[in-house]
Amino acid sequence: MKYQVAIIGGGPAGYTAAEAAGKAGLSVVLFEKQSLGGVCLNEGCIPTKTLLYSAKTYDGARHAAKYAVSVPEVSFDLPKIIARKQKVVRKLVLGVKGKLTAHGVTIVSGEATVTDKNHVECGGETYECDNLLLCTGSETFVPAIPGIDKVSYWTHRDALDNKELPASLAIIGGGVIGMEFASFFNSLGVEVHVVEMLDKILGPMDRELSEMLQAEYAKRGIKFYLSHKVTGVHGTEVSVEKDGETFTLHGDKVLLSVGRRPVTKGFGLETLAPETFRNGVKVNEYMQTSLPNVYACGDITAFSLLAHTAVSEAEVAVDHLLGKSRPMSYKAIPGVVYTNPEIAGVGKTEEELQAEGISYTVKKIPMAFSGRFVAENEMGNGVCKLILSEDETLIGAHMLGNPASELIVIAGIAIEKGMKSDELKSFVFPHPTVGEIFREAL
Image 1 (cartoon, helix red, strand yellow):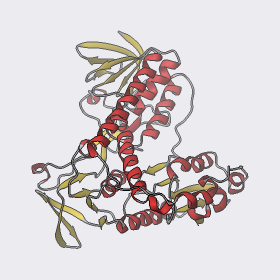
Image 2 (cartoon, rainbow, N blue to C red):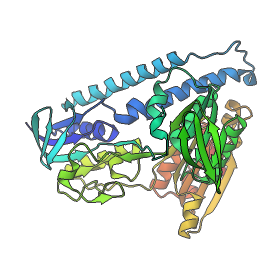
Image 3 (cartoon, rainbow, N blue to C red):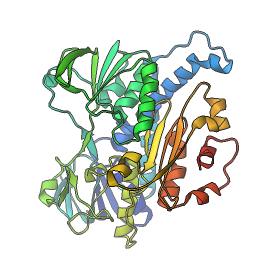
Image 4 (cartoon, rainbow, N blue to C red):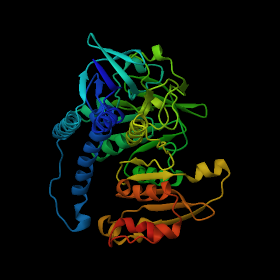
């Protein structure tokens, strides 16, 4: 069986590439060993947002009195929350399958193995291809913490399927995954501890806004241990250390969320032996590896482990094999954390610019400058921060406050297109909307 394009991995990069190539009239075979949609759709982006929306709805009902609404005896049903999450995932997986089938993509379920750049084996069959796309994604990184292998710890997958709340939860890692689960379990009444090796939560996101989000969750009862290293896990006890001092935290469950790493084993990558980058596969601006007609997209590139980056990379790769030279741009990749309130950023942070010695100016106002925000966020706070270069070009934008996840793309488009502040401000924003905050800030 010969195809023009063979794709290993059915996550956002893989299914996007398959759909685009199929739509262009190419013959495509897609290999997926688990479920279409990959980690993002089955045990990442979508299921976590489904749970977080239930938690947000519960929070809203509990605090409805702020809006002159009475909701007696507010409660939640965790097994039903999990069941709804599974229903949402099933629906979207079927949607992905339907789109691929509609564009003539052959879907093969099973573990694929690359034998050379033009041949893939799966289920005893050999498939020949002109172009090979590696879209194998990433997996949870489990650090070598003493004792961790002897306890029944959670990864994100376990937390998503759990139907009984622990009384307390110790989260190792205060990045995006850790904070979203901290938000969810805190809303449902669990005692949450977050241990982070860095001196701030949310890694590379804007420091000022990250600290504001941390302060908000500290008020809600989450305990943070920054610049702390986990030195051991024993049963329900987590040993942490800072500046030579060691103490113990209790967590009925321990959630590991220290990051992810590219999947580079188990599918014959060593046979191809492409050039590497960090712990992934090196690519150029067209997503080509060091081997002709072999592309890599998504988390396997070890560059930007985000689903929306993977989608864009897949489109760039397919464009290139179709003869279109559109380079991948990473200038305006949004980052979003779906806590409540949400935090989002795109482009440069102040910390990056300071490290690079680049001059900039900041325009920053409270989200309360938006009438719509005030109407919908009683006693809520937030910030819109815009970063401009010396010639007033927008180079960074960072927001804390709902719905930051929906608004950050406005700034992302402006940054990608190199807009100056007066150009962005010249656009007419509907009133009243929270998006008007950009005009107000400028």
